[in-house]
Length: 173
Image 1 (cartoon, helix red, strand yellow):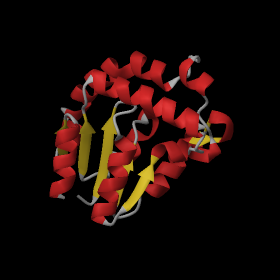
Image 2 (cartoon, rainbow, N blue to C red):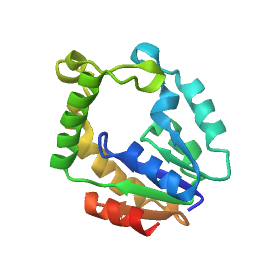
Image 3 (cartoon, rainbow, N blue to C red):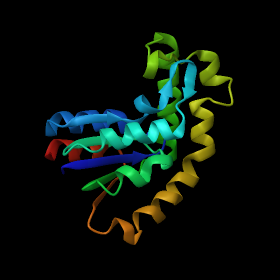
Image 4 (tube, helix red, strand yellow):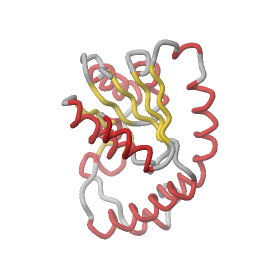
């Protein structure tokens, strides 16, 4: 596992898992959300974002987490391993709600200093909870097809379903 991509639905635990894996493997952790978001929840323009992803993923060893299809063609072909956190919908929705409560109550700065507010988390069309409800099932179906693609031949693909599998995988690294 020299270059590892962590994918999964929003709130599946990609960043937490990627950081833990990167620490265990003594590799750089690249969080695509960190490269994507600008202050005030403004999305970085695609060409700029792609350039940052290209530069970050040119290294010899890394763990990248994120689902940004706009840059997938850059870092997936460089990967030696893709790990899909394929958790159940109830678990992911639970994590979206509890994460939103935690982040909005602690006001801990996230990417580019952005802060999740209670209003944004629970009463906005940009809410991560709404996003999970809207995208979970289509993303899951898309990953089934993407990961079966001939283009990924030679890349080690690992599917982890449920936190017990995630924990066991990390324990065995």
